[in-house]
Image 1 (spheres, helix red, strand yellow):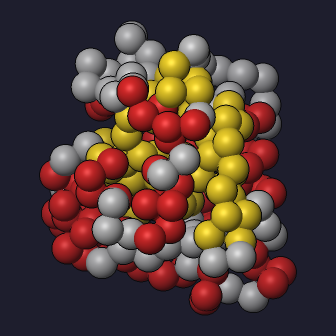
Image 2 (tube, helix red, strand yellow):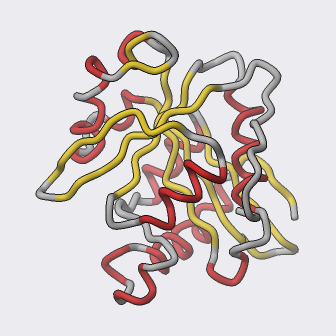
Length: 194
């Protein structure tokens, strides 16, 4: 499996995987393995890829998964993400408010259903760590309360810390934070393959 920064040519495949895993396109049973709460356009994905970055996992000629990372400025126009960022003044992580840290937004991340359980998330996450080292201090993610699979994978599997919660349109979300390691490597807690 190859893990690398996304190129413009990867955008159509990212859109396909995104559509196949968007909450609105899944039944209740399919949502148990995780889902995406937000969909981005091709233009928005290209903008993300050009800034903080999108990391892709490619097996042969097939896109197996992707992990987006974007700046707070990029996310301000999105009401759900703006609601999360409004909480940053009141949330501390490693002894200081998120609002006074150099933060980027982690996610969404999505692994094609046929590639899950093979360690791809770990590879995407470690590649992202190497991409952002020296540019950011902290990554921040959010997970819907009704997406326990994703919450478990990110907290137990990747070691992200639950630092806050927020409500948006009657739905509860958890705010997660993690350090950008100075060596660009991710910590490796004991957990199942993610």
